[in-house]
Image 1 (cartoon, rainbow, N blue to C red):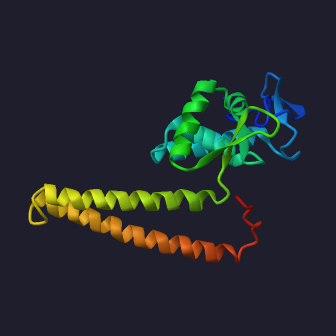
Image 2: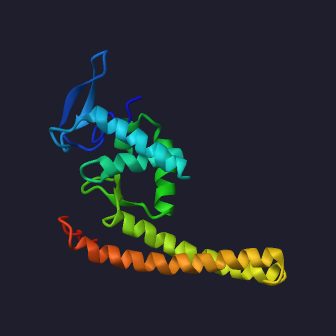
Length: 199
């Protein structure tokens, strides 16, 4: 399987062009919204490789593939049918993947203008949003750990000391992550990057 063999295809209402798909010469649809110099085979390999890295780090495999396909799409958005066609998966698999990605704040949903179809879109500040969400998770974990210390008999017990150290680590990480995100926002202004579009 070559991964995203048809990103921007059947459901987007856009003109399609055909390119050969491998040695058998079978055609596959590629959305005209993608750049002309785009190598769809290389794109497919990227999607599968990056998805494997994300899955290795703990993300659900199908969610990782959908996320990678959205990331490499020119608009950063695709419909359910486009994702199903591009990744050669069922609509139900797409639905489960985008539900997970929405829960972890990596993907949003927008109604396609003039249509009842939804488009799944990456957030404008994708990694900033993702790590900010992790920041909130760390706060909750810290609170739970501190409650756990008391339930384990206090920091004088082996279990309580272990959880107290974990809570202290989460506190440290929370503070460092907040500062790191602020530094990123400042650093971004020094880079030759397009402005962040309004929400």
